Image (cartoon, rainbow, N blue to C red):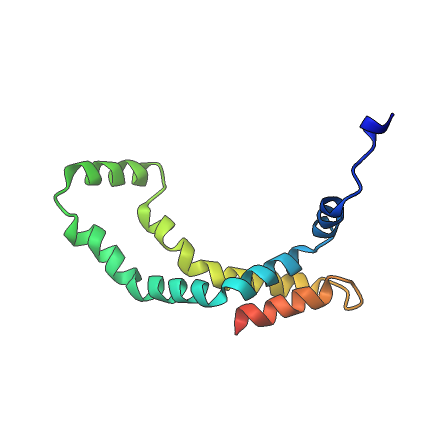
Amino acid sequence: NTEDAEPKDADTTTTTTKTNRTLASVFNNCIKDHKEQFMEMYIEFIKDYDGILDLFGSTFHGNLQLEEFLAKKRKERKPLSSFLIIPVQRVPRYILLLTDLRSNTETNCDDYKDIDDAVHMIKD
């Protein structure tokens, strides 16, 4: 039955090619395409981090609804400061993850070069 046959067009080839890419190659492409934007946002957030914390310590002081919400989150062991630090920790975590992944990948493995490139790209 010809209706059940898979289509033989460019879309099938593209899909097959995309599924064969490694996680490291996808990461590399994403970073290559957007590294400058990521770094600008990351550096800006780090520069503003203390000011952001100060906003919740002083500027928003007196906002009862906000204070109740933050108190509730502290009781749930989910303080706002725990969430605000996550972006600061992200890049160092990527470096640790990729370095560990590289050290546990055989140098003759197809993924090794992509992983090594990712380590160097994220450190630069």
